[in-house]
Image 1 (cartoon, helix red, strand yellow):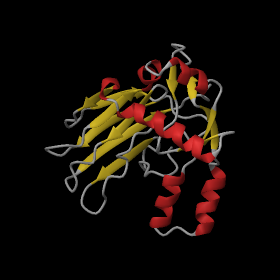
Image 2 (cartoon, one colour):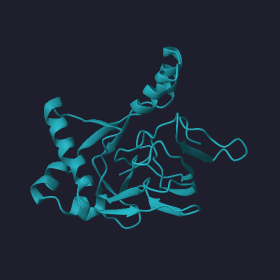
Image 3 (cartoon, one colour):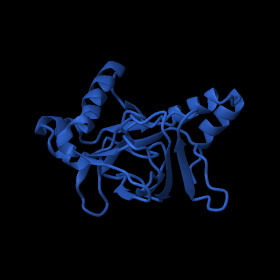
Image 4 (cartoon, helix red, strand yellow):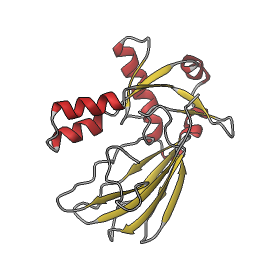
Length: 209
């Protein structure tokens, strides 16, 4: 179950991502799912139930290819670095919906910030990938803030390079299944205020190394 997203009453492992008039899309940012958890998801299966006539594509970025393309000096610099991830965007969402500060702090304590390697190794392929994202990564441990911010900004830009991307155009009942351990995704919000309704199931993963 996702602690911040509406879960289906009959099937709690299923979450609903419904956007349209009165509920603007908010995940149009490059990210890897729930990196603020100790064991982020292995992957996700997303099904389109209702899609707009135009727009609403999902973009995927291959963060293994993005890592491979880095200069060797940058790879050496990243070796062994650890970044801290948290769920601030969801906590801010709770605040906007009127949750009390006590409720927000209780949820923050339930899901505290997590430390993950800046470069993780895939447990099956052993390929390395960049494992920082602009939605949930806050800083790199042991670095002055300005240096951490600058390095993270450089690494975030790797997801924006079209050479590492593909674009999924949805139709009703389309299914997408992605590996959350080596990819980031971005849900284009170019359809609003049209309606886009999706269902997602997330697969339990392991702790990044």
